[in-house]
Length: 519
Picture 1 (cartoon, helix red, strand yellow):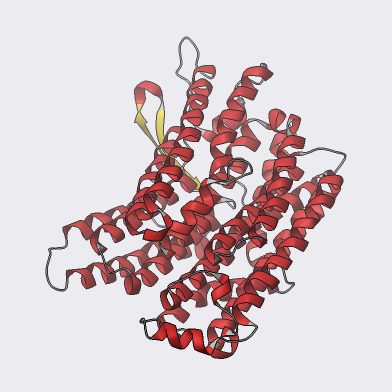
Picture 2 (cartoon, helix red, strand yellow):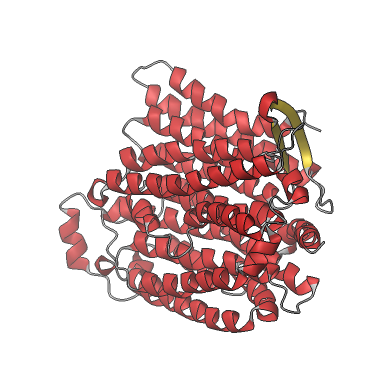
């Protein structure tokens, strides 16, 4: 065992961020900062890999590597961390995407490198902290901690033509509104669990057992919807999604990768970690409206993505579509509807696997968009065509990621969407039938808008020759770009061919969660 393993995972990026600030200024300080940050970020990845692949027991439903210490005794706040089959894969994915984002940024970030790499490492601390926190007070601290670095990453290093300051403020305010409502709900639950002689609790495990407001459906509903809104904005679930396209479009490439790959998962993770076990009755009573919002996100997200001409904005709207599948799976798992535990566990397994797969696939797609933008200085899909023949490596990688995104069998996206629908048809058959349209529209969007417009068609020799006079040079992917995308491509294929590599971890916890809420 590694002593204080999860505390190390949380603190290592924070220590790295502090060291980045302390590196003395000099002629080569930017280069030193970049490579220090990249190398340092590998340490949490190696630790997370050791914890998951060597020490973690996939057959155990209880929390593992748990640490619990009294922090603020007067109000019973504890430093309580731990991971299970839901959080361990997401912690590992966070460390992986951070390494890849920093590695890619070390080649493309040329201004204010110290601040950029400091913010990125600080953001990693916030994200890991949310996934390992088992005290709601601590959860909220890390939730808010991740908000500030992302704001600055968008506002300072965002693309000037995409109104980065406006997009950053919009992202901040949307998230903050949800956070305030969640804070009120946290305080209400604490008060409800307190007595005349003992303080209340913030502990998520205890709250799932005590179920605040269990005998008062009105107050339970108020707390539920306050927390629901915070998580729904983060997902983002329709109609709380409007901040996402602006934030993605303006953000630097690595910022978009982390935003799509991890930050959106904080919302869906909250659904499974907080809302389902603590408010099962309220969730079940509101399954239909939640499933309808997921349906709109799935169908609307694909249709709006298909209408985009900006490559990055298209991928951003596709995230609304794909995250809708996660909420559909969670709703199908919570709905009773005559389905047995197996059907519901399949839906929840699919939702959790979709969280991981979306991070891998959409993270890769944002890297791919950024690589093309570095060459063409435009994301207008009408400006491309015929690139498959001119840049074959880029074309092959874009094809792989696009097919994974649309759910081609043999790649990661297929198995998670299949499981979501397999479970949803057992509990919410009409909703699931309508959601199938999202698969059709999503496939059309990737085939027509992305593959057809970017890789196929006629290559405009004259246009590119004219652009070359203005410093625009088209060339295939370089070594560092291939290295950046290689781990994500490997995961797309591995999970597509052998999904049990992660499903065994997810299944144990999904059965435990569903077994707990029917007690």
